[in-house]
Length: 396
Ligand code: GDP
Ligand code: MN
Image (cartoon, rainbow, N blue to C red; front, top):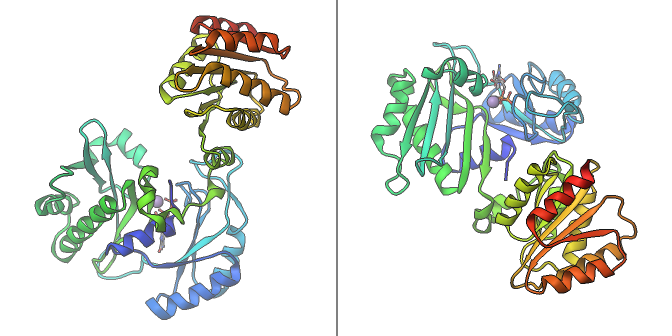
């Protein structure tokens, strides 16, 4: 589950990570009140208005702007709230902005120049360890840094059983070229950031930029946070942070119906029971010359109701040119599933794309007969290859 910047910062703050302070607003009026309140609390004269959408690169797209007085806070936030923000990470239509974060300006002048760093904590799947990835080249695309100047990206691997050790936090501060007060602040920052990542069951905390202010404070200016969905049962306060407006609407609906659905770009919709079989089915579709339009695991209980819900989800995608249903009947008997397909089909009236059903396992032969005799425009198959050939035939 991805979070908004302001939510990520709330979590950081709760673990003692220093952040650029801000207040979220959904209208220009609220933004003005937020700005006044921030000035009282922090003494800031200037404010940054930041679009809250699940996409990076907001600055480049015009979604982060500096306001030097209250009038500008009002004008900028009325421009940003309601806009479709296009960034290098969104589609061409962009993302609708429903709210802005009104934040204190932290790039104020002082004894030293402000410096921007990149710091993230994530899981290194190949070593099974957590990893702090960091660079002196903050504030810009880390992908570009990785491509053009990979030697400027450092990593620190952390054994999850031991946790982050003091010398590791100091090495990060050292490699970032810090000394004196900023060095100390950075080791505190890293320690608290790692704790936040670990205890919130996150899969990613990406802070770009981390700012060294002109008076040597280290603070998080941005926050991109992903929480592991499988851990949400023990973080009800984070679960409440889910913003469904930011998620794929079909995927949200699938989740509500208890279906595992991932939207993809292809032309063959698939309905399968079991994640492994679903992966194999997607390979099969590719071999037959198609592209899967989705991943869909209907789970163990493929009854008529679930089959119908799955049909409806698949058919919401206009690029679907064929549907392949591939069910292995183990605990669920194939004839039950076949009846489910037939019932769902009848309930839905006409379906305008060819459907190929492959049922294998317990009562597969009875299931095939049920489908063949149903009089519906559904083709049945028992063997994997047979199903693939039928997909190929309907696509060509
Ligand atoms: P992103 O573009 O989506 O990654 O959004 P960020 O939160 O990283 O903000 C983009 C840029 O806005 C940062 O890299 C900063 O250069 C700038 N910015 C953020 N906060 C402030 C601020 O308080 N004052 C000024 N002057 N610039 C800021
Ligand atoms: Mn950023």
